[in-house]
Amino acid sequence: MHSLPASSGIAIFTKYMSEINQIKVAIADDHKLFRKGVILSMRQYTNIKFVFEAENGEELLQQLPLHNPDVILCDLKMPVRDGIDVTKQITKNYPGVRVIILTMYEDDRFVGHLMDCGAAGYLLKSTDPAEIKKAITDVVKTGFYLNPFVNKILIKKNYSKQKFNPNLSSEIVLSDREKEVLTLVCMEFTAAEISQKMDISARTVEAIKDRLMERFGVKNSVGLVFYAMKNQLLD
Image 1: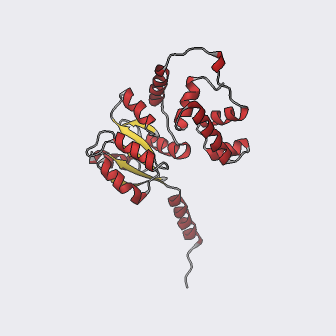
Image 2: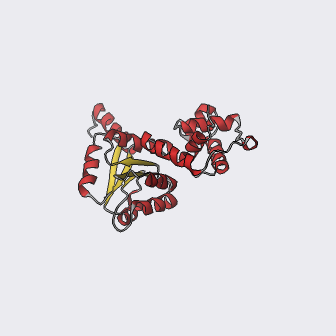
Image 3: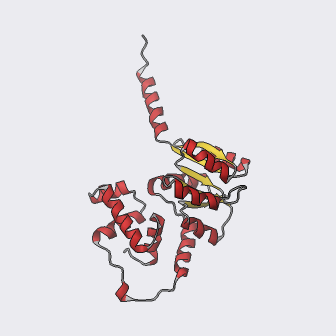
């Protein structure tokens, strides 16, 4: 019976650990050359693994339960079913899967609408691979990725929804714990990280986030961040 050298065992273990820690990514775009180009450009990041490609929204939805990706890079304009439709379906039926829109459309209305539909991020096709990598890792860690391009549009969108009408009687008052949780959410910490920093359970953190979302009338962490910014809730 032959035993493996210690170095071989370490290499196998290292490879195993890197594989189980990989982020599984899918890409949906009707242009094959673009899909292949993105996959090739991301090959340098060993913690990201592309598990499948789709050329339209219908194919994406069919393959999704077979491969269980963590993140989907999704184009907007695709045949059969477009990116808006599939984003709505995925965020409704697969809440653990994060959708990052990767498109050529810079229209403010698309950005705002897709984020309202549950998209975790919005990138232009001219985006550098390093930023795509950051977006992928951030949405897995915190649930969303906001770059300056999206920030500017969403802030404008939120401010334009209603004019500011000073009303001291309706001032939003947060407890110290709520304010601390909200601050850490805006700093992109996960519930687990927040629980460690505040020495409370992750379940308590989620309960506070849920309570804040209900009070503010928002659906996710992105909504919390922009509500806090718009209403100047943080110092």
